[in-house]
Length: 346
Image (cartoon, rainbow, N blue to C red; front, side):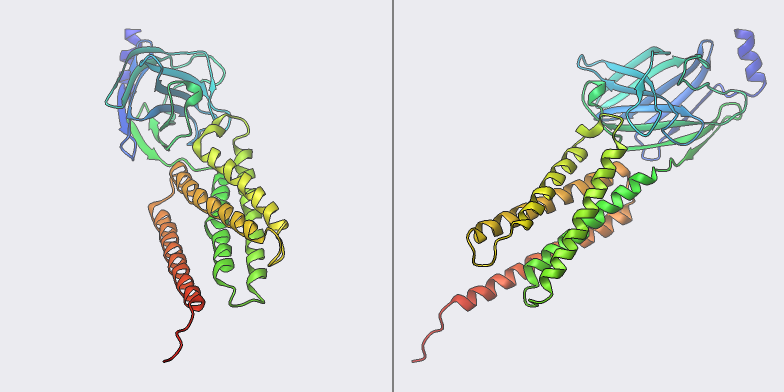
């Protein structure tokens, strides 16, 4: 084996290397040894950190290793592989842990992985000059594998062990995620709030406010249901539906369905239960709006939305909220002045 290592070194095989993720959270290093490749993964996390090996900059098809702290306070390493964008499938461990630690929310684990395990789902570590992607990721979670949640961020580096080179690579996000996000932002973040504003302040135009309100709400609800349904389709094969983003999304879906039913049973103005109906309608609308804003920002974090896009949506929300508050106050003062009796002239 020593002769083999010397030969590999003379041929220019990189015996060691490292890189740090662009967000500065995960450090990944490797070194070729007698029993295979030794990897060290280190990162600050409130849940888990991980690395993977793949021939393409994507999760699907990757050989993955996830490290987290179990209920005993010990760093646990899970060997798995991904057949799709979802929770990795657990494999029989084909590694040996050399050391592990967890201090100040920093997880560090060093392990040896054979170059070729011969197991289905395991990637061969190439040292013949063929480049491979070393992936990294981190995310929140608990003390069991089942409690690990969707990653906050991920990426990778194109590594050539023979040429001693590594280049940070961007992992493209699935197009379905993009479509899901666009539908959610356009429906729950723009169309439905605008419909709420029309119902609140557009009554000065009695012939058009209700058709506009109804149209925007129908479009918004259909787009939101489509986006939420797409989210469920994307997560149909794994158990990340317990993630807070999915839980809030499910709550919003239920509220939307109830709100549609409330709209369909709208009493005529002045009819029985009209006041109760109005407050129920307003309460559900406000709940949907607040939960939607919270969930959109959670989605921004999961998807890794660029800062400029977050800033643009935040600016829109600030303008909308301030305008809504000012118009509400103005309308309240105007209505109160109309109700106050006019003093009789002396």
